Image 1 (tube, rainbow over the protein chains, first blue to last red):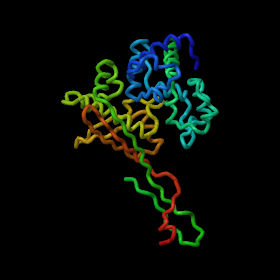
Image 2: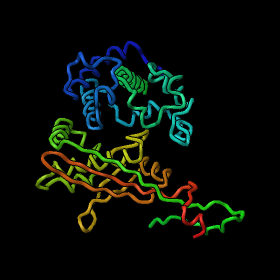
Image 3: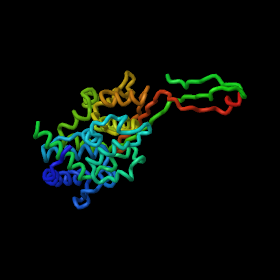
Length: 139
Length: 163
């Protein structure tokens, strides 16, 4: 997956505004490294709101499942997580490409699949939106 | 109906395999939704309804006196099922993959489709049950997914002692 840095920066403002408006926060609270589900407390209905606001402002449609698609990168479930649903080395290596801020070494053998979204930041979301925009432009 | 698989109890002192009691697993999930919040989203985002709810769900709710509560309850039901599965809205999954349908007695039941149905098969889900409720602007749903028994070995003390 390639990400246009320029596009990500351009879209970050839209994403930050969407997150702030959906969650009723000041934009100053929506920092690039803030985790959307974790620190900012977004729930599933909030994600719906955020993604629709992004679409309305940027024209880029991102569905909630697109976020999971990006994080898992097409890796089959049985390769992404082990029998205990702990994310494997293969899974973590791909996650690093979408979520560069994660500490793979610290998470190795410990990260449960259910916890993955809790690590997803505002900047990561902007990156996914940028990739979606690039894919749409290329098709 | 799922029943635990039981193996004959070995006599003490004999060379026998350990007693195995394979029990079904129950996965649970709960979600609560502010009715007004969902109604506002549906009003402000015209495409949201069709993305989240099936035509059948929308048809059931529309025209009802408290349509907003019914829709919010259904949204909570979808989320509670996904929580029980442990996936949230995973890769290739759609909100419409979890559909709430009322049976002939008016009780809400769940039909699974698409990637969610596939995940349920993988998790050996044999039955899904939900319960919905509403009060003072909030809708809540709970889901229970009963999965077929696995291969976990277990012993029952009374049987292991040959009594």
